[in-house]
Length: 428
Image 1 (cartoon, helix red, strand yellow):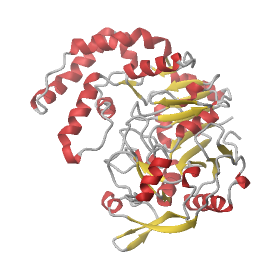
Image 2: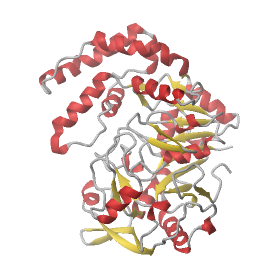
Image 3: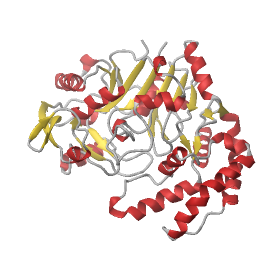
Image 4: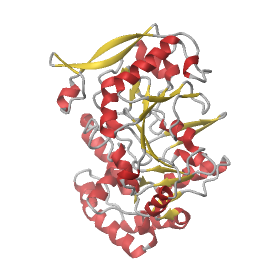
C-alpha cells in the first residue's frame, strides 16, 4: 500500500483539505509535515463546513490517525482551541498524535512577527503575523522551544531565558517595546502541558512502522510549492518546505518510502500576500473569479489575488516535486466564460520563456503569453465521470494536463466531498 505526499502546486489555497479528506476514508494516517496555523483548509462534509488551520484534514475521517510532525510549528493555544471546537461539533479528536520534536510558537514569536512586519512598512513580506517565521528562525538558530520541553521545567526555563536575552534587547532598543518577562512565558507554556501530553508521541517511529506494516500514510503539506522557502518566489514565501522533500524531513520518513506525489492544482490561479504574480487580473474577470470561487483566505480572512491558469508554474511544480499526479480543483468556477485564457509561457525582455526563471528579477518582470481555450456554460457540478463534462471542459482539462507534465487523476466540480470526478485511483 502506498505512502503518498499531497501538496499545493501553486501558491497554496488550491483545495488540499478537500483532497486529503476524500482520501481519508482509505488512509490510516494523515500527517502535517510543515507550517503552522498560517495554513488553512476548508473541508465540506455533507452540509457541514470545517475550517482547519493547524490540524491535519484527516481528523475528520473516522478510523484515520491525524499526526502533527516534527516539521510543524505549533501554537498551543490555537491547537487546543481548534480541538475544542471540533469536539463541540461531535468530532472525535482523541487519536491525534503530536511529535515531541515539533517546535512551539511562543507569545514572543508572535510579537516579533507583528512588530517586524510593521517596521518593514512598504517592504513587508505579507506574513500572517502568527509567529511562524520567528519560530522557524529560532529553530535554525537553536534557541527554539520544542513540545517535549514542556515536560522538563528546568530545560524550558533555560531555553526561554536564553531566547529572550537577545530578543528583549531587540524589542526595547529597536522597536521601542517593553521587555518580555521570561517567568511569565514559562508559566504560560507550562499551563498547556497537561492538556497536550496525551497526544505527544515518537511520531517518526510510529509512521515508519506503519509504512513497514503496509498501512496507508498520507503526508499533507500546508501552503504551496511557490511558497517554499527554497523553491518559491523568495522572499515572498513561507518559512518552511511545503515541497515533497519537506515531507521526509518534516515527518522523519526516508524518500525511498514515498510511493506517490500528488499536486493540487486550481483550474485558475490565486495568491495571498505580496510578491510577483504574472497572470494576476485587475479587471472584472478577476473579481468574478474571486466572488464565484469564494476566494478569501481561511486563516487570514484576506481576499485572494486571482488570475488565469499558469502552466509555467504547473510544470515547475511537477519538476521540483517529482509529481506523479494532479488533482484539479474548482473547475466549476470557470463555467460561463466564452473563452478562457491559459498562460503557456512568459515574455521576459522581449524573449519567450517556457520555464520558470530562476532569477527573482526576471520573474518579477515576466509577462504572460496566453493561449485561448473555448469555455462552456453547462452546469458541471453533478458530473460523476469525465465523459459527463461538456466537450469544451474536457478539452480544457486535457490541455492543462498536457501543459503541466503529469496526469490529472481527479477533478473537483464543486465544494462538496462528493463533487469530485475520479479518473485514476490515488491508492492503486
